[in-house]
Image 1: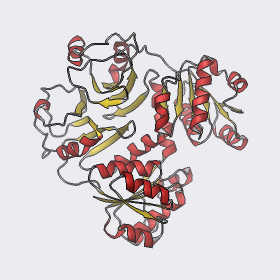
Image 2: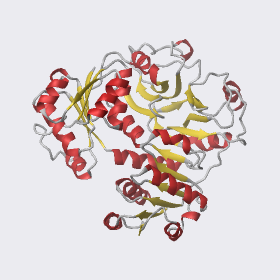
Image 3: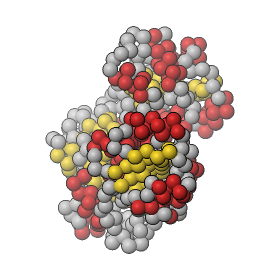
Image 4: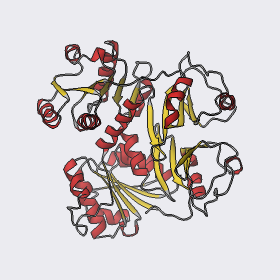
Length: 457
């Protein structure tokens, strides 16, 4: 597959890294020569310095025979024009645009743009993706990472194992024997910074971070088994009233049940949030200041969500809120190198906007009948949800007989709409929907086992 990626920032770079790993022909375009040099030196990609929306630059990038263009620059307008030029001048068949402004997204969703003038096949909204990720974190306070799979019947949750976890030093094989009816599978373990897919003989230790794929109905029991008492969020303080914070508050108002306060230091932004929300209290002030946190009663909050546009502010505000007594803290982190600091600082969970946006884009460019892709960590692994076709190599085979790479595990399945916990003897049938954990280097082989032909449209 030949792909042009416009924008060599965090999202564009990550997408380029993922696709180049999978032996796709990738060209990345950006006006910043330094970013292009970094991409070409570290990745197996072609780099081009220039304006992605200019026809001559797209021509040099190979738009004439490109299968797809991903417009992920920091400008909505550049992304829209890039898709327009790719469609009108070069006839590129698949166009993905990252758009932040709600007005653009609404106009496209309502069909107000003429298709012959502006053709965008898929719109990705980072702010909405992050807001939805925040809601999932709040729905599972015990988890540091969450994602929904299999039509909402299953959840991937990340759990940090403490010293009092009841199943420490227990082999996963024995765990299955002890809780034979539990519909949950440990698909990955991070130990001493290294992520791996465990074998049945691997044990779990204090300090491990595990990724568990479980039937949603079994989540409370799963949390209990791994030493994470169930809890709910009734009082929430959001620090940062921008698009993400406002989006989270609006979704919570629609759902009801959580009392929410927002702290926003920018007065016009605070006024905008106050006008847009009905039942949310909006406070104008600095969320780093103790007096403002006290006014918001952050010390008695069930959760404090920090989503400003500055990583260091987010970390410091989360730490201060936790010291004041907040039961749970979640912060937005753009720089993945800061993630190892979260646990030592007592921050319960983080949201990586790059990871959420990358996951959203990847699901639109995969081969075969892939329904969803979630990127774990700094692109270290993925959980791929896909439908099994009749001519797929795995159709009709027992899981134990499939030549999956060592870094691949089947975590859950849907069969005729019902959840199935996969075991070694489970036979995968045509029409099944499977959720598969794969280390990044094993993704191409998983796609080969799932696909009949290159069907990314």
